Length: 97
Picture 1 (cartoon, rainbow, N blue to C red):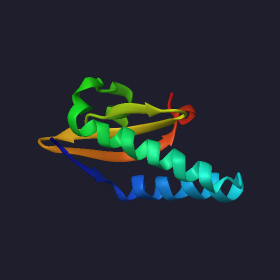
Picture 2: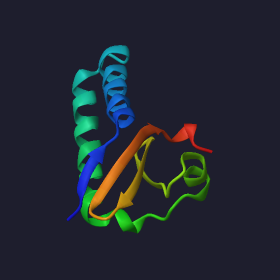
Picture 3: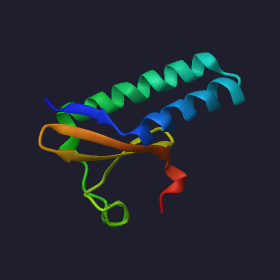
Picture 4: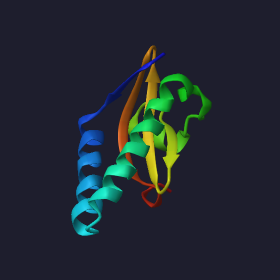
């Protein structure tokens, strides 16, 4: 089983997502449920990270092999090195071309 690690940017993405849903949309319970589901989906990568292909466009842009996991309308961008799944960003799917 792999270890999940988050970049500082991914952590900031989660904080911003929570603030947006809880405060801007005024739905704190929805924010909590959404983030719990997102966390479960990311933890799923511990055993299944290899299922998703490398996305060449994103890999070229960031400089290492990036894979993409979608959760509802968000994209989790991650890479795999040995026994670590490194989550780089969690951004809206619409931001990815």
